[in-house]
Length: 272
Image 1 (cartoon, one colour):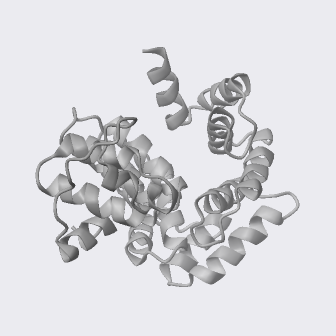
Image 2 (tube, rainbow, N blue to C red):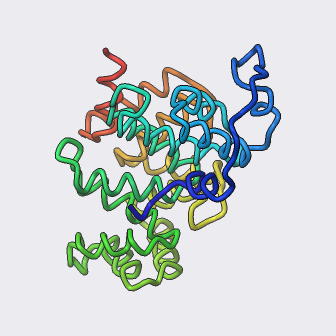
């Protein structure tokens, strides 16, 4: 398969040895792991995974932050979608891929596009186009090829024009057009929301959480269900907005009322 985690590649190249037995009492993880930089932690976690120590690898990935967070989330998503070391849970896998993409993983954005394009359970062409666009804007040619197979051929749709540029390999001009659409009067709130995803993840543009939050809020207030969901997550996590459970629930309900699948799924999971 073409899309693989960088930790898989590097771990194979470096042939890392197992982690020692000294354990940090507060986390239950080896001290050598706790004291290492994120890139080394990723190598260690994958080494444990390769040796069949799936639970330890999972615990390590759960505790990797900073520059390694997006990749750790991607690897965790793989565990849940494949049912390796955990009970298979595709919905949880999608949630983790989304978190990984939001943290800056182009591979996770591409994987979301594949799932929404091909999964008989989660198939959603709108979501597929969204995440493939995000990946393609960051230079993923495979994502651009898939967009070509989905192209609506509607020259009147501004987002189709963005996709056409991506399919042609011109991601720079596609990004310029997306920015122009978001800044137009009146704005294209779909373009604004996709631009916000880019600023949140740092894909194709420099990461800017405040800019992402402002764009999500403007689009959400205009009625965009996708932006309403994203704003809900920001209020829930306290990233981009001050943490506020009431506001998080309010925006989640507004998004679900427009039948936005991630919002519906999250409400269902909360009710269980």
